[in-house]
Structure formats: structure tokens, C-alpha cells
Length: 481
Image (cartoon, rainbow, N blue to C red):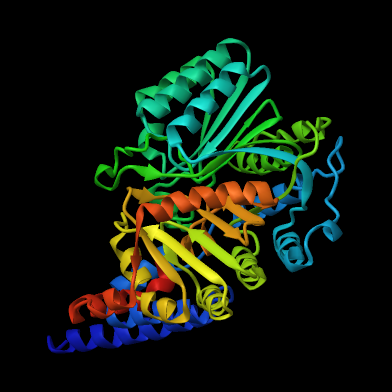
């Protein structure tokens, strides 16, 4: 065969491969048009490698067995436990008409109901949060169930580990579910071995290795942060089990988080989410915990949980956020470390500002993800022109994922305002319909803005052509970041 024909064969082979891969992308039912376009551009402009990246990261593959199993678990262990004990569905007629659409959408796409009589202690200090959790573990009498995306073998990790070991020695059953990639180093650490030897049941969520990468998408992660103590105390928010100094990325420290300690019926729903995830990766069914009577501690606020992930309605969180943006009447404040929303969510945010709502977006000035930072800044110009006030936080890496509406409605949880949280990761967020809690969270957001510098229109216009080219180029592939 003529030697010259080999390049021709490779060229034809690459063209055929591109056509096939583009067809596969176009046939994806759950991808947005923007995401499809971004993948097609990657496949066209990066021969062969673009195809490999798409096959590894371009689908929401959890694997057939895991998808089928997860569907069965959700049916067997529903999130809603409103019929137990004193827990009652909150009458939506008592919610201001301006915000009923939020609760309705959250219930429709998220399968969680508004439950009343809940109480929360808000933590804007990670050290205090970790110590409070350790104290509750030390007071536990039945069980301690913890789920975290990241757990480090630092002072925070060792403090929680020691508390779990002490609890186990008292006869308390302790279960620790850690994401297989986010907590990879901890799962191989001496502290983890000590936990297992002491009797703590440690399980890796969504374990990842080279062999699984051939069958499933290994970057679909369990990004939730949950703790439930004795079926009555719950923790959730943005805090991993790690020091604010965050050893893997110290130059961005401190990491600034926001989480809550909960009591009331909402804890039982939080527990249901943990139990679903635990069953998924351990094959241990803890559903009996959900049938125990719920003891209410008195009049509290109405709240609603929303668990999302690649196996649920993939647009659920986006739909909730869009509804929340349209519901805002006077003020909307968002804090997120990663701002890279889908087109519809971004459009809803722009319309919110154009309607005259005071719209604030607070993000870190220095981001640990250079690509996401560039993609975020590619949209600054249109956000500012629409009236969105952008604040760049200079007090560390702002990791808190919070939202307040008119100081009357609040959202707090684990989800970032980016494509990964909106479409790929397993996340959990809580809506609170209470002026006192929303005002308290708004006060914490104010402290973030006081440590921030506003991004003005002239700042953006003074960026160099090279900077804008880089940001806009990354903005094109934002749907796949």
C-alpha cells in the first residue's frame, strides 16, 4: 500500500469518527442546546482527544445497574415523611402569594414538601460548626450518620473522627459516607483505618477507578454535606469536614462556608436523603429509622428540602432558581464560589435585575478553578448592563452557597450556581420561608459584601483584549465545565 495513503486513511477515519460523535451528541435527550454545541466544538477542534473527553465526561452515565438500583431505592425510601408523628405539611395558603410558586415548583420537581415547626442555628464560622458537630456526636446515644464530599486528615477531620470513635465505644452506631473522589486521600489515611478498626462503618460513595471509568462517568460525585444525630439533630450546608485553611489548596484560604444545625421534622427528611445514599453504596437498608415518631420542639419555621442529582429531574434545581428569581420583588442576594449557570437561569437573573429588583451576586475574587473564573467573568458585562451588582470577595475563597429573597425567603445548601451542581452532582438544599431566618442569613451575606470590592462597568471595559479573548473563549465551553 502506498505510504501516502496512511494520512488519507487517518483523515477519513477522523472525519467519520467526528460525524458519528456529533450524531451521538445531537441525540442526547437531556443536554441543552448550548451544551451540545460546546461538545461539538470540542470534538471538531481537538481531533481524537475531544472524542475521548466526551466519552469519559460527556454523558451522565451512572451505569445501568446503579440507575436501576437508585430508582428502586427512591421508590422504597421516599423523602417525604410528613405522616409521622407531629410532622404536617405546611398549608401553602399561609405562605405569601408572592412566593407560593417557589414552594410549588420545589414540590413538583423535587418531591419534598414544606414542613413546619423547624429550628435552625446558622453557622458562618467553620470552626464553630465542626466543634458543634463534635459536641453533638459526644452526646449521641443511638447513632451518628455523616455524609461529606470532602473529609481531610487535618485537625477538623481528626476531631470528628475522635468523636465518632468515642461514640462507637459507648455503643453508638456510627456510619460515615464519603465521596470516593473528594475524600480519596482520607479513605486511604491512617485516621480512616483507625475509624474502621474502632467499629465505625466507613463507606466510599460512588467509588472511582480506571476500570469503572470504562463503564460509567466517574466525575458524577456525591457533593452533599449531611449529618444526622439520633434521628433528631441535623446538619447541612456547604461545610466539608475540613479546616478553613484547606490543606489541598492553601493559597486560596480561608474557605468561607455557611451551614445550619437543624431540629424539627425537616431533620427526618434530611435523614431520608442520607439513608437513600447509604443504601446505594453500602447495601444496608436503614428505612426503619424513618418510621420512628417525630418529636417537635414547638413553633418554628416552615422549610422544604430539595435533593437533586443525575438520576432525578436534571433541570430541577435550575427550575427552582428561575422561579425564585422571578418571585423576588425587592431584593435578591446570591453567594456562590462558582458562577456558571445555564442560559435559562442566567436569563432569569438578568430579567430580575431589569425588573428593578436590587440584585447582588457575591463571588470570590480569587477562584481555585481558573476555567470557571474565566467563564464567570465572560458574563460580567451583560450582568452589569442589566443592573446586577457584582461583588468580588477578598476575605478568602467564599464557599457559601446561599440565596435570600426580600429578606423573607432563604436558600442554603451544597449546590453551586454552576453546571456541575445544576446538572451532574448529587446535591441537597433547603428552602426556608421565615423572615427571621432569612434576615439572619442576609446579615451574613452583608458581612461577605463588606469584605468585597464591587465590579464596575469601567473595570470590565479596561480588561485587555487578551483577557477578554480568553474569558470569552472559555465562556463558549462553559456548558461543559
